[in-house]
Every structure is written in C-alpha cells, then in structure tokens.
Image 1: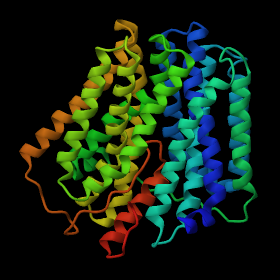
Image 2 (image 1 turned 90 degrees about the vertical axis):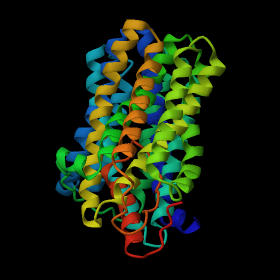
Image 3 (image 1 turned 120 degrees about the vertical axis):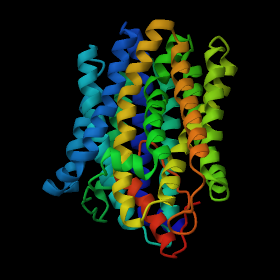
Image 4 (image 1 turned 30 degrees about the vertical axis):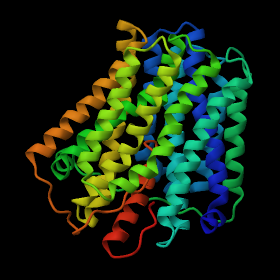
Length: 421
C-alpha cells in the first residue's frame, strides 16, 4: 500500500478532488434543475448527455493524447470543465445544460484515460491489483464526499458551482506538476457485438443492463430524491448510501466470487438488488426504507460490473481480453445513455416510483437471464484451467482501467501472483 501511494500519490489526490466535483455535479444539477422548473424529461436528457459524451470521449481521447500530449490535454480539459461548471447557473436552459453535460462527459472520459494510463505505467506485476483497488476506493470516496459538500451552500445560488470549478482546477495541480511522465494510451479495437455475445452471453447482456442501472444511480438519483420531497441532508445521505454500500460490498463479493460459481453469485446479487429496488417502489414515503433500498441496490449492482468482467475472462484466451474489455465498456455505455431517458419517461408517467420501477425491472431481468444461462449451459471449465481473480472496478472506469484489470487477470493466467483483493 505504501509503495502504491508513494508512486502515485499525486494521481490519487488529484482524482479524489476531481471525483468530489464530479459527484457533486450530478446531484446539484438534479436539484437545481427542479428549482428551475425543468421537466422530468428535460432532466433525463441532461443526465443522459453526460454518458453520451463519456462514451464518445473514451474513443477519441487516445487519439487526442497522441496528437498533442497529456499535459496539453489535461490543461485544456481543466479549462473546459471549470468553464462549464461556472456557466451552468448562468445558462439555466435545458439545451445549454445538455450541451454542457456532453462536454463534461467527454472531458472526464479523456481525463480518466490519461490518469489511468499513468496508474498502469506506475504499477508493476507485484502491486497492479492493489493499485487498482486503491484507485477505486479513492474514486468512490470522492463521490461520497461530494454529496456532503452539497450542504455547504444554497443550491439556488452560485457558490456550489464555484466550489466545483475550484475543486476541478485544483485537482489538476498535483497531476500536472509531478515529474512522472504519462504514457499515451493505444485504444484497443473492440470485438463486434456478435463476437462479444458469443464469447459470454451473460456478461454481454449484464453489462448492457448495468449501464442503465448505473445511470440511474449517478444521473437520476438526485432527480428522484427531489421529486420524493427529500431535503438536502436526506438527498446527500441517500446518494451516499448507494456508493458507500458499493464500496463496502466490493471486497467480500470479490472473496466469494473466487470460491463459487460466478453465475450463481450474479443471479443472487441481481435478485438482491431487484428486491431492494422493489422495496423502493412501495416505500417512497419512508426515508429509512429508501436508505435500505439504496444500500441494497448499491451493494448488489456496482460489484456486478467487476464480477461480470471476471466471469467473461474465465472463458477468454488472454489475447482476446483487451478487445473484449473495450467491447464491454461500449455496451455498458449504450445502456447508460438510454437509462436516464427511460427513467425520465417513467417518472413523468407514474411519479418518483418510476425510478425504482426501472431499476427493479432491469435487475430482475438480469436475474431471470442469469437463471436461464445456468439452466441451458452447464458450467464449463475456464479456459486457463482455473478462475481468474476478481479485481474491483467502478462502472465509470475508462477502457484503460478495465484493461489494467485485464492485466491482473493475464498475470494470473501466466502464473504470476495477482494482488486483486
């Protein structure tokens, strides 16, 4: 752990501050949009735009970095993010926020590609899995802290937007001032969707579904909380419960996934998350029940991303893992773009319960499909002869972080001791 922090403390500190600003952004826009009388559909488009920009950025960022270098990319993106954050309260129109969210999504995606390339370069075979674990904890902790920063000022004013802008600007200082070079990342061409599905039907369908679930958590949770009548403190606690439970559940689930049939664990987690979301459908008037529902969904859905990736890698040749990982990032991104639009439509039709109804439908659909796959296909033997290790990942990870996890898997296949858990 000390070695990891010594090699990449500037990256970890910068990403922590960056995630505070990004975590605050999603929540603040949902609350402020309601104050500005945006319709539920308008807000769903705004939230979806981030994921569209992120998906586009994950494909364009490597080319941009190769063209002008990581320092210039970082400086340009810092300026763009700060500018958009300041302009949000000045241009309170749905079209302006949608355009801003596309830009923000693109910028954050490129930042992640650059930062995670650095993480990969600074790690070695002995600590790659541990570095990824620390990075994931730092990212999630930043998002949680961002929820409580919401209580520092009135969302109807400018101050919180200024806080976000300052945090993002400061986050780049330790990264840009370090002497450690950041390598350019060569994007891996993803498998075709057909090849991806043939490689692992359960992982392919699961990744698509999880994209919608993650978009609900990161994009529309604040919209739901506002429509459900939560005050600022309750909203912060509600969203923190989602990500806090996800953080606490990652490692026990990782330990368990290395010891039992991963398909059974996928089904169990999806069913648990679906049950939590169903509790939310029928308990929108009870805040304690909402916290339980949020915790159950967060603890189940977020670790599923890492679990599905590990399951797919069990049956892939290691030379195919990078291509599959790029494909999974793309599929997950498609689900994340569509998710907020569907939630917005449901919430406009039946009210706040539509948020939970959407998550319930997705997670129970994954449960049903998982049961189907277990029944129609007996458990095959892993390609490598034994299961690859589980490596914790956030669903907001760029293709670089996913490929970093893949290197942990490949090292395990080649007989090197991984440090994933």
